[in-house]
Length: 225
Picture 1 (spheres, rainbow, N blue to C red):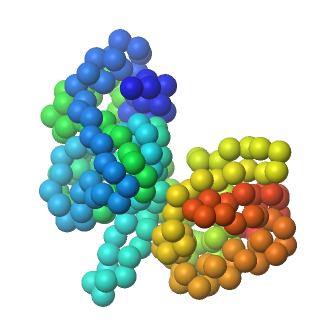
Picture 2: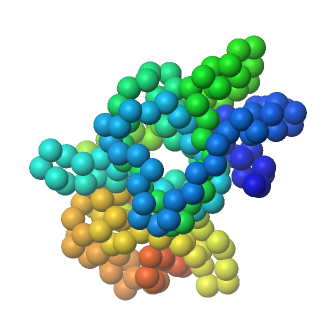
């Protein structure tokens, strides 16, 4: 397992090599195939997960059956930390977008490691603060941004984490369907597709199956503001 990927997780970034290796040995490995569910909203849970390979989506379902995609996460990112500090039902459903490998850490193991390790606690607080900031941004975007602006911002966010720079632009293999991308933006698929088609006609992006090539990052960034 690639320890460099593990080091990207806030939980491990403040640890020395010896502590990180010892904690890694107490974690369990889980693998999912694309489309499989790790856990569902409302399930009981007491584990934190770190993604080592692949991508997952975190989503919620409204009472009328509509789905909202909260986030897409990839290698080095972690989720499930809320249950470690406030045990209770899971707040989202986690589904593998691609074949995915996780490492998990139980509530008891984490509390044992937090004792006398303020750097680890700071890493978790950083993670929680980032989640709160992200939630605030999402609320602000829904109130103040139009759909094309939200689509542009989502593409840039995905490119920051999954993009690969090449001669013809930034290749972003997000692995999302059109419906999932619309759920991430919080709009209908038709409206999101219209925005993407407009970006493509302007030469800002090139659309490909479950991916996009961003050819004009600057213009797309201006549209995201």
